[in-house]
Image 1 (tube, helix red, strand yellow):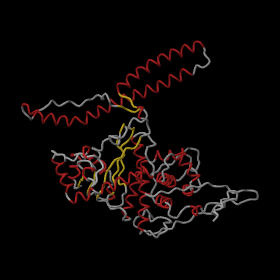
Image 2 (cartoon, rainbow, N blue to C red):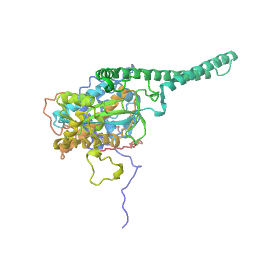
Image 3 (cartoon, rainbow, N blue to C red):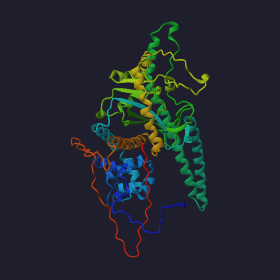
Image 4 (cartoon, helix red, strand yellow):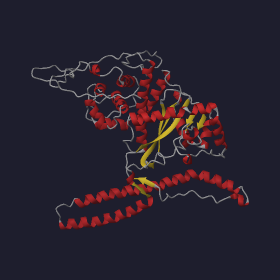
Length: 509
């Protein structure tokens, strides 16, 4: 039997619909993002005022554009601008307008505080809609690459040596420039350009050296209280029981301590012993472990270890979304002081005392017996012994088993589905803002799925996020959004309709 193919005729003019919504699927995330953002109070957002008197893009549209593009793996301002032309859902979101990449970049850079406020509003609304029930939360961190090369790191000693070398080179070039001026050479601007380049590099090296010294002094100041406590305990003992002499905290940077010239606040980190070092940030998140898997707090740390992040992650959860009853963490968060501080406030902490692969052994273990550490560790610290007993109880095992199934999928969606594996901005403050925007986009994506699961038969043309500024009004499903047609040009004799290449990629959580 002969094959039959669909007729593909690109020469015949394609008549576009009068309403762009006819080209966007009814169950697309874009409807939810538009409706939710438009009902939020966005008076704290700044617009890109150029001083020319031109009309500015409204903050609601710009924030919706960022959230929707981030949720679909479009992060750079240049690619977002391109999406306003070739992606039908983005084109509908922007109402057929096209903000340039500079406007998008500046709006994102100047409104991180307002984005964090929207992050809180989204969580509060999810709680009011009974989609979020804060009680048990999971915390974890993931390494995300910084916008800097690891080959631009330098130690304090090497920075001083290079600065001296550059100082000598600049002096030599200045002599050559004066000599060139006396001889009246044709291109006297070449040498001053080389001088300026070396002077800028010298300033960066001197700045890196200064930052490393300041960092060492701050670290010594933080360790001084612990040092004084240990000295006092040592003086209270007699004879050989005193032990070794307590070393004073070092106020100078170590020989291996490095600073990056491109992004000084980023650090060399690696995910595990089997991974390579990368210039990265430690992105922290606390997730709801009661079923919604929403991100409750998003922080960025410059410390590769998670041992000092537990208390900060829990305290970053807004009080408006509910009271935390229990926290689930892996062995990287084992910090006695922070665990006891949280438990003193009535928050139960379930923190693994060793790798989860050892706690939950496979029935058919793949690793050879000589490479497995089956022998349990004998803990001496009282809080570790109590934690081990708590995790060994049926309730502790049941609760801590939720950790992997709530934390790992969230980071999997952010990194693999949304494709966010590297920050675009530099500096911890800006990186913090970008991480909040990523987690906000993830929460929108997740809430859209949760509402679809709650109302599987609804067409989802709109969202139940109605009237965010007036939560006392009853929510209804589905909320029909008024259809607003796009202007369609009249066809004239001899004129042809433009062919619009459209692409829509939707990926589920």
